[in-house]
Structures are given as C-alpha cells and as structure tokens.
Length: 414
Image (cartoon, rainbow, N blue to C red; front, side, top):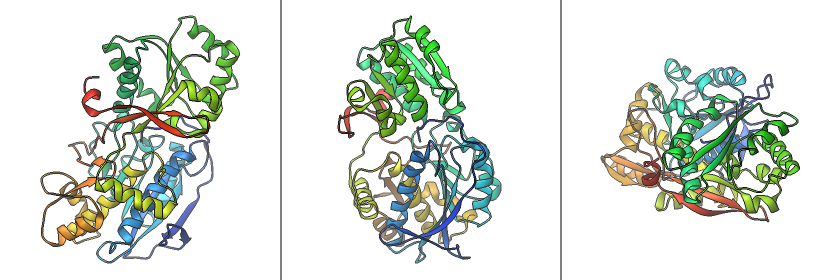
C-alpha cells in the first residue's frame, strides 16, 4: 500500500485483540488454539492513519470469509489476532512481538508507515507475511518470508507524473511530509515528471501537524506552479489547504497519492473545492471472475460493494496463503512458504476463486491464482505489480468517480 508514511503518535498503548471471524464477517474475542490456522493482522488501528488499518482489516476479513466458507484450509477455519501499531514504527515492534508470541500461521500488514521497523523479523521467526506497504524500500528486498501483494509506490509516483503530463500541467510544486516513506516517493515522481517535460519549481518537505505553513507556501508560490503534487496526512493537508486559501492560492489542481481517496482529506479542503481541484490515486480496478468473487464476498461481509483501497490486495494475500498451505498439505510455515509462488505464478491452470483453485489442486494440477487485484505474479524480490492506477475525483456529495487510468504500459515509460 501506497499510503502516507509520516511518523506520529509515539507511545500509544498496544491493543491485541483475538477474534474468530463469524459467517457474517463479525468477530468475537477468543484465544487462538494450538493447531489452528491463525492470521495475524498488524496495522494502524488507531490514530491519524487508522483509515489505512481499515483497508487491511476489511480485506483480511473478506479473505478469511472466502476461505472459511469454502472448506477452510484442509478443513480448518482461519481465526485472527490483531495488533495496533498506531502507524508508528516504534509501536510496531512490540506489537509484532505480541502477535508472534501467539505463533500465528501467517500475517497480513503492516503498512509503509511501519514495515521497515519489522521487515527483518519475519525470516528469523519463520512467519510468512503478506504486506501492501508500497514503500520503494521493498522494491529489491531479499526476504524469504515477506511478499508484497500491492504495487510499489514507485509505480504510484510514476502514475501521478503521467497524469500531470497528460493534463499538460508542467510546473509542479511538490508538497510531501518528511517521513522516510513519503520521501521515497519523490525520486521516481521527479524522474518521471521531468523526463516528459515537467519542471519541479519548488519542493516542500513539511514536518507534520504544525499549526501553519504560510511562510513556506508563500515562498513556493512565488515560482508560479500550475499543479501541486502531494502526500500529507489528513490533519497536515487540512492546514495546508487553509493556508493556501488564506494566501489566495487554493486555485490550482492538486494531485494526491492514495491519501487523496480519504474523505477526511477532501473535507479538509472542502468538498465543493475538492470536487474541482483534488484528485487521488487508486489501484486500477481489475475485471474478471476473481474480482467478481471478491465483490460478492466483500458485500456479504461488509454490506457494500464500495470496497476500501488496497483491500483486494489484502484479500489476495489471505487466499494465496491458504492455497499454499493446501498445496503443501501442511500448515507449518517452514513447509508451505515454498509453495507461495507455486500457486500464484505461471505456469499453471489459471483459477480465480478459492474453491475452484482447491478443486484444481486436489485434481493434481499446478495452479496460477489470478487475484482480485490483478495477476499476483511475484518477481524475484517477492513484488507484484497489479493492474496500474486509476485517477479518481471527488463529487460534492463525497463520492469518488474515476477520471483517468494509467496502465502498466504507460507507467513503464516513466
């Protein structure tokens, strides 16, 4: 997941909640029992970026429902435990250890906010992890037990550049917070943008949650940008928008990352203004039976087909883990970790739902699971690349509508 990576809210208490998913997607507290298939969820469940944690939780719940209502993992249902990172790498480490102490079968999460603090813990613990963390630091990772089911932020950054060039907006002001993961977006964005005729007229690196950025913004606008490319948390972006309005500069397009799909960011600008100026990025919506199955399950669990960003990628991680265990005929992570790419990568019979994939496995076939988020074909660095990015815009009623799609073929040119 490409999301805002600011560091915030250090020292928040850790809450670990053990749950077992019920048939409707609701959860009840319980303690994982030995021998059961346990999914750990490590995510920001509180604080400014709890909305990103929701992406993970909702996708994981849908994935567990898909598996549990189609025979489970060799007859065993998936139970879950959760830990709150508060979006902070400092809090993520004890949260990770709290989960690991329960000996989960696999984990989903965390986000780019915390992944680097815990990345090297998975291999030594023999704990398979399926993350959506979009940070470019994972582009060349060498971790046996970690797989990324969502696209890299480098593709997100290049898609933002491609959209700006498509709109002939070639004088950009960059506004990003000073978090490491935010700053890793800047090089691929700047490279792709300038490669196709764009010019960065100013580059603001902001400390989050300050009371004013008037001085920095005033100086930047002396360079007369005609577009803002940004990634900030909701609170910081609201302050920036208020300052721009005061300066009389809230009048040019703002191209945000996937943070721009958060209603709090749009409300910070004002929905009327956001409908005219603000766009965000979403992973492009795939088509086909895997996505249709995801929507059906998501609606059953969450009573809506308006799925949260990145939730299809999290769903795919759960399904792939269950298929790898089934193919290995084992829930021992040291055994089934070697089957992840065997069930998700070509060659093999393409399958699109957990039930149909298990049927093929039981028939002795080599499978190639086609995910809800697109083909989940992992490269040598355990990265997958999805189906490109869709630019979305807000309506005055607070809904998102697609306005442009940047396919992988275009991203490759940036």
